[in-house]
Image 1 (cartoon, one colour):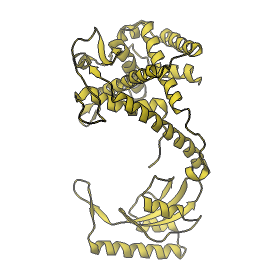
Image 2 (cartoon, rainbow, N blue to C red):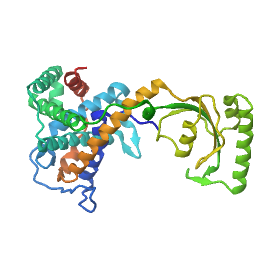
Image 3 (tube, rainbow, N blue to C red):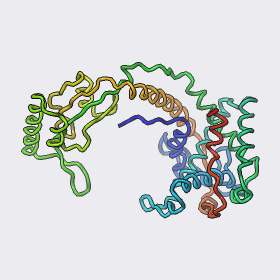
Image 4 (cartoon, rainbow, N blue to C red):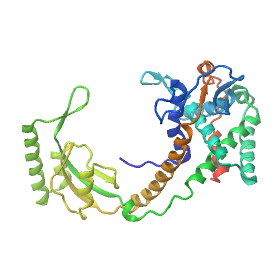
Length: 357
């Protein structure tokens, strides 16, 4: 299992799932990890949801939704919306993802208020310039479809910028120096003789003792031939139950027994038989230090630590918030079907001005 790169944009999508579920589920405190939820009436006109004193309006959600919709259509075409995931239309899945994304930004801004984080003059100018750029890119049809004016874009960009600034403030003390040993990634080939079967539902079932003995005999035969110098790849084709021959990985990414054996091999060395829950393994080390992947893994480890630091503080804060969703209005929100609406660069323009890309 590889550690994936996140950054704030990806982190927002991951963390906001909890916020979305809490708004939709109507749960109340029964667990310290579940936020207090209150679904109420009395919303202002076009108000989609409220988190404490942070409000999200229909025009704001339509900016996010329309841009995300058009990003998908730009790549896959508008027939993509015929797709269903677990019986739910892709359109509804994207709606929920959009709601969670903007709710996350609103919640982060509340935390920023608590920490007295705000934008300086240079940052406000970046936001203003991005707003002017995006606003000038819109057609009259796009402005009408989203129901917006320039102030809506300025508000959304300001909130996004505050989110970015708070993220950087929280992670600033995370040590970016990662040693080669900590980030080291190795590359191995391996042969697997399974000691399990799959039932009709795809669940693993242990083999009988007799079948396990046969598997061990097969593994011993393969090991003997490998250590006699036969080509390992050909042996894998003959013996292995794993379609993948080569694995590159770092620490804490594989089964602990498998990983420990692999990291203790030298270049070209072959392990004894290693038993895991999957079966019997024979490992051949191709490289004890993959420099390119190790350098990449250093960055990923730092990003993971930063995101964990942010997530811990965010989750503690957001669990105290009261959230209100206008379900009646939210159920009425749909994609724009106007072929003249093609705006999809709202987030790209922000990144260009804020990060200087």
